Amino acid sequence: MPDLWQDAMDHAVSLARTAGTLVREAVQNDMKVMLKSSSVDLVTKTDQKVEKLILESVKEKFPTHSFIGEESVAAGEPCKLSDSPTWIVDPVDGTTNFVHGYPFVAVSIGFAVNKKLEFGVVYSCIEDKMYTARRGKGAFCNGQPLQVSDQKEINQSIIATEFGSDRHVEVVDKIFSSMRNILCLPVHGIRGVGSAAINMCLVASGCVEAYYEMGIHCWDIAAGVVIVEEAGGVLMDVDGGPLDLMSRRVIAANNKMIAERISEQIDACAPLRDDRHSVEK
Image (cartoon, rainbow, N blue to C red; front, side, top):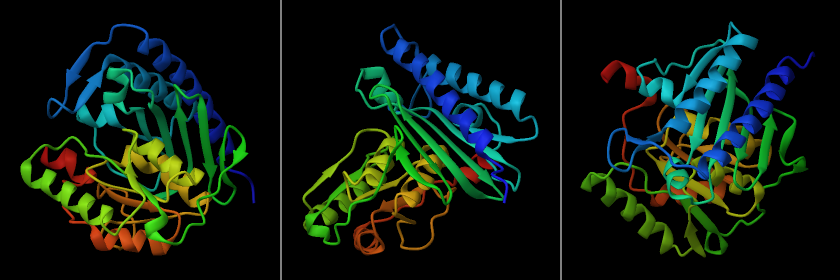
């Protein structure tokens, strides 16, 4: 079978590296910060500049491909995953980190065909770590193979998560309820670097056994899904069912046993789906 999407993946890696250079340069300069939905949901001119760079380059090289980008959706573009080749892009994953100079910021590029993710590229800009994966061809960081942890005991595990940007009391209560339940299993610890994409890459790298979150978006996790799976990990919804990319809920784990133990402890909420965003905005 011909390797249909290698050219697209090579282009994604090149774009991620170019975008990462812009991000690193911007960290050294003053940044214009704007609010999105709340005081903790931020966007900078760098988010917009990077997404514009990626979008224009994709449209020039692959004019028939579709595009889902965080800033495009925020500007009113639909968030619909069709059967056509689709780029799913978070130009700056970890914008709050970026604004504060906290050194975990990523460019995340996922690519789907027939609604199935085919490759993922996550570039951790400040660390200069390029994570890549192709469906059926393995996962890598700076060219070195990745493999999830072989830990099977939840009480010997580190679990990653994030607090999200929703500060409604009922949502925050569920976040802390879930965290308390998981911490008391017990686990070795709970961590989070402020970037969904990097958290997923840490699962793929074997540094943490699992990552879960409610309230993320498809562009936060699309690339990471392929990287985790190709490193030997599993993905599922927080309720234990199959992962739905548009549901804004995810568990990424080194194995099904760990994922299911986490799922049992989560006090789940149901954020507005990404594919309903443009309908109900």
